[in-house]
Amino acid sequence: MFDITKIRDEFPILTRTVNGKPLIYFDNGATTQKPKQVIDAITNYYTNQNSNIHRGVHTLSREITIAYEEARKTIQKHLHAKFSHEIIFTKGTTDSINLVAHCFGKINIESGDEIIITQMEHHSNIVPWQLLCEEKKAILKFIPINQEGELLLDELPKLITSKTKLVAFTHISNTLGTINPVKEIIHIIRNLSHAAILVDGAQAVPHLQPDVQDLDCDFYVFSGHKLYGPTGVGILYGKEEWLNKFPPYQSGGGIIKTVTLQKTEFADLPLKLEAGTPHIEGGIGLAEAINYVTNIGFEQIQKKEHELLQYLTKKLLGIDGVTIYGTSKNKTTVVSFNVGDIHPFDIGTLLDKYGIAVRSGHHCTQPLWEFYHVPGTIRASLSFYNTIEEIDYFLDALNKSIRLLS
Image (tube, rainbow, N blue to C red; front, side, top):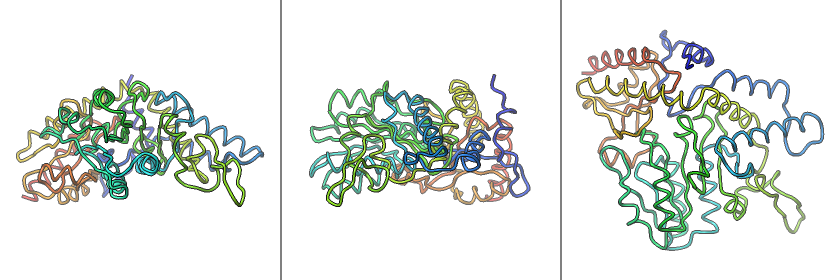
């Protein structure tokens, strides 16, 4: 059973106040809050396990190396990856994409080659490809969207040519909430091209459980802090055949078999792509976060979040002047909106006085807002630990803010 009282009790920050009001946290698209299970795992690491991994014979080092590699296996199982060495620990989604852009670009992109992204991408899935194309004199294309915030997939076959080397796209839009039909997109690409496929799962992993083998993507990336885990840790899943071809992304300790003054022989996967001391407690904390949401069950999470999305959307559309951006029938709990000509920063600032945390601005998707001809929006992004009562409080505060600003 989904016990919202018990769940909220497991997130210590939800009991605090902001500006003398109970915290209403509607900025989950930026980062999610952390359950006590994750916090305790990090505390336990520093209290009882603190040591370095992969390089010590003493008890602490052996214990934490085992725990860290078990965390990797937890993530492998969660993504349904074939091998644990296909799971590479990174600093986050941005770092994962940059790793692929650097390594894939070095071995597989030449002048005149083409990379395809979409019009709804986060800057982290735009800028690395722009830089790569500038460096290699390659061509960057994008799949357009419609007014509902859905990809125009009929355009994709027209964009794919014999020069297409990689297609990178988001699983769920961080701004629109649109859930893209990933399997359909990949099917189209596989039928027309040998291009590699990268899926940005940063916004997807809090809401659903991807199966990378079923999707048949070459790369899948996400951040721990979006999935109720720590900041500073993320995942790159890559098919073994690609990761074996990649040169080291960074050099240093931890990625070598032997070093002489003349030559270095590099370690096998996954260590080859994990230079230096990693974010050990981050990896362990991420595994605990996965255990936490798995125990709740993604079916339960999706049911609860759909209820919240439907309620918030209906109530917002009842307010004069509200425009919602992203109205796909297949979306998650991200609602970006404006109210008439009121600047989103003004509303966000006033809502904060009521203890309500929302995001105001362009949400790192400026090309998307160029399409809609607005500079940005207010974004309310909800999680399964939010409630109908919180939405009602938010709507009351929003109406008061609108009256004041009008």
